Length: 448
Image (cartoon, rainbow, N blue to C red; front, side, top):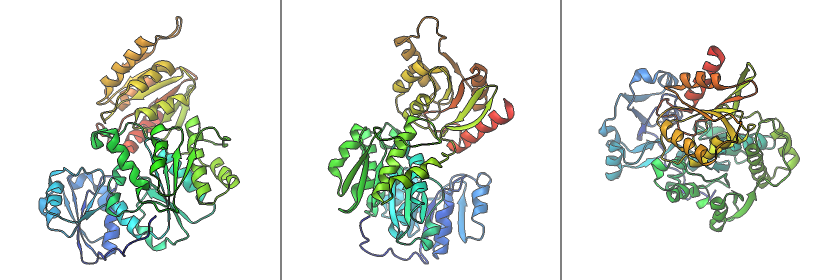
């Protein structure tokens, strides 16, 4: 990461407004940290207090004013600094008014990047970044004091006091977080891009804009920094021409690692983790030993249980068609009953539909994109019909996740897998993918 031009200004006695507390505590960490810095903090959230009880409880002892149940434009204008949640679009009315008025603003991750003294490793991509981030954290912890955060896990602001230059700080960074990195002009010392697939086009508009946000991960690197790219992704690999430091590539052709998590995609994730580890001075033997023990992450192709010879996999973190393709390809052909559908991020489902037609036993669709996925899959089946004597692909609509899970269980046979891999975000029916995955696991364990 490029050196700081100056020390960040003190926040003591500054009026700071945090936009969004969140049901699951998205604004809790930064609020607590700001209070500890002596800032005069106001938190605004459009949700009422009764929907934020856990987050409010987490602020116990923190001297912050909570303005809940709607936004007051005065909180956005009559302040010294706004902390903008990356999920909040810049055209949100009160925020847009504040930006037009020249109110100073930043984000939680930018606050951290400005102040972190440790060596930074940043990971982004459309698919696989959470698992790869966790793998890297597992490997680097064998050699260095290591923390993992960003878009995965807890806020690391509270840990700033314990981080030294010897620490390795591993950050998963979303396009939303990276979009605002130019405000601090910093990139990690080691940056990894796993891949680039259509995603978040409802926010970024075009693939070019989406990719440009991702490039902030390495745009501010220095000549001694390292950029790790996926050789097998034509867009990502072409970014080597824009690197300011050394470039290293990973691909699927190397010696495989012994892993406890399934699928060729996890071998690619492991190859990416190894290239980052190598850039950090960790040898392959240490990397292999650490990856051997890596257990995987919740909601990411996680085996919930097996009942009556049917395995149930929670892959709720899968919010893109490409992620669902990876999950389907990790299971034997014609053995998966796929549950898919959710919030519409304006991406196409044709590629996923072709893989469903080829590999799935059955499909259960739900949510805002149910009709789109069904229509695309029916067209794929027509284009590539199954051989004579093979069971036709069954497609069933569901009203909600409970209905979908019971339908999928009824369609599955011994030896099959019921796979919740929605290919879509959860926001049409759930607060987040964790809530969706937890409900699926509960239904499987308690109702089937």
